[in-house]
Amino acid sequence: MDEKILTLKEEFKDTLSSVTNLVDLEKVRVAYLGKKGSITALLKGMKDLSVEEKKVFGANVNKLKNYATDIIDEKIAELKELEIQHEISSMPKFDITSPADLTRGSYHPITLVQRQCETIFKSMGFNVEDYSEIVTDYECFESLNIPKHHPARDMQDTYYLENGQLLKSQTSAAQNAILKKYGKRLIENGEPIKAIFPGRCFRNEATDACHENTFFQMEGVMVDKDISISNLIFFMKTMLSEVFQKEINVRLRPGFFPFVEPGFELDISCLICGGEGCPSCKHSGWLELCPCGMIHPNVLREGGIDPDKYTGFAFGLGLTRLAMMKYGVKDIRDLNSGNLKSLSQFTDDEV
Ligand code: FA5
Image (cartoon, rainbow, N blue to C red):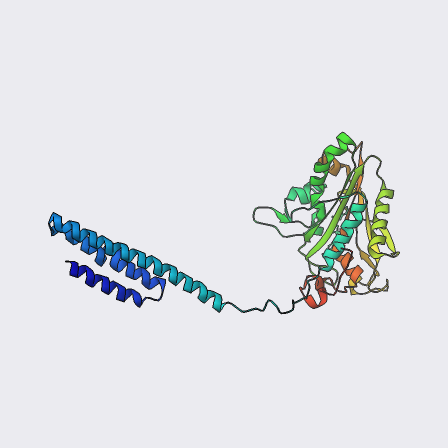
């Protein structure tokens, strides 16, 4: 019987010496130590031996079993280490002493303009808010005095989700939430509501040199007692002179938006053609940049604010168009092109 054990041990050692990977090693383990393995079979075969024989033979088979288990464990560790070494040696080599690649990324022109506007408005006491791109019909239209089937909806066709939500067509979609968020402090502590909220907007419309289907706006609202159009004009003028660092020709003309009364269109003289007329301004010499107006009483009321006590203004600055004018980008579509060669040329050390 002992002869059998010795033979099996030699055979096991032989088999193991030719194993070079973990998969084959597992096969060997099963072949010797598994339920139907050769060493397990020796233990099962003991049933025909006498009690004395069982004691000696059993002890020897157990020795062999422990020996095989230990050797297999050692081999597993050895093969795992070899696998790691192999993985390391096949990794791409790099020289930590070679000079660093100092090519730096750059901010997108819209980010630059947005940050600049945020800095300007923050310095005038405005909070900067963020808002989701997917909104409800209530946020984008109904809370803004644009009920279902109102003709003003035709001006802003957008993309609808199957659940009835939509990609916001205007940053005004956040107005109601902002009024509700800051209204309590206005009513209880007399703190004016002053907030801007930049964001991406979407419209299902044909693109041209000054229209994109995905563009950025920056909304602003201010509500307090006795806020008037003069306050609105002051903030608009300050913002433009800070952004452009020079006098800009602007014109204010009546504009219709159901959520303001009165409403205005604030246009700037096109900086691409100097007001002569070009594709960037649809050959008019003027670019629609920042519609604005006094917040409609219905919108204030919907936001929980009493329009008999408080008044406010709102504006919807076209951030993408502002970036075009500031950086002399003739075609708005270049800004979404992902063309690094053209987009990486703009820098602004202040942001
Ligand atoms: C609005 O979106 C209103 N929510 C603005 C507003 C806010 C009015 C608060 C009153 C009070 P309008 O659709 O005109 O208005 O868009 C505002 C600005 O966004 C435009 O002047 C323009 O600068 C920019 N804009 C609009 N559509 C596009 C477009 N397709 N591509 C690029 N910029 C656009």
